Length: 179
View 1 (cartoon, rainbow, N blue to C red):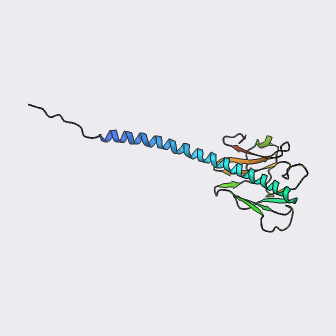
View 2: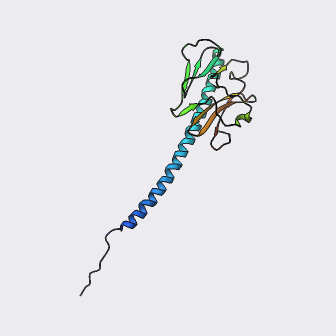
View 3: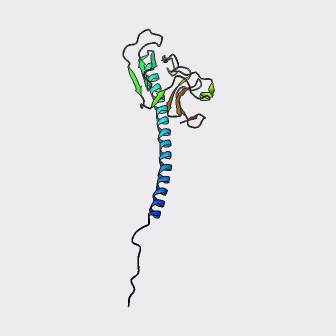
């Protein structure tokens, strides 16, 4: 006579809960890593965009053979005017850079150590930077930087006296490095 064997058909509740909890832990770790990666990418992107915008403004000032003024607009906007920065009134902007809504152009509170720590911020409490054509040199100010912030990370476009261009930098963990 044949005996019928009893088989389990499925998984127990404990086994399912163990697998689900392991998947939840791994997913949570992945989300945190992904958010950090997105934050790094947005900060770098903002620093690169600001550096490119300031280079374009310097080239445009040289092409037009006229002074251009870059001023801070809203929290995430830079505006370029065809006028000296000490002018009383400004016409419509000739160019603008609008960053992502979560990225802000800073006027203060930038970590030390950028460009050796001796460089003044360009878009400061005065909220302006003059781009004046000069023979054989960039029309950009001699030195300074425009800093941006996304979340807790900082980025900047830095103009040093010894360089004829803006260098994008970022500060992911307390020290500045070039991009």
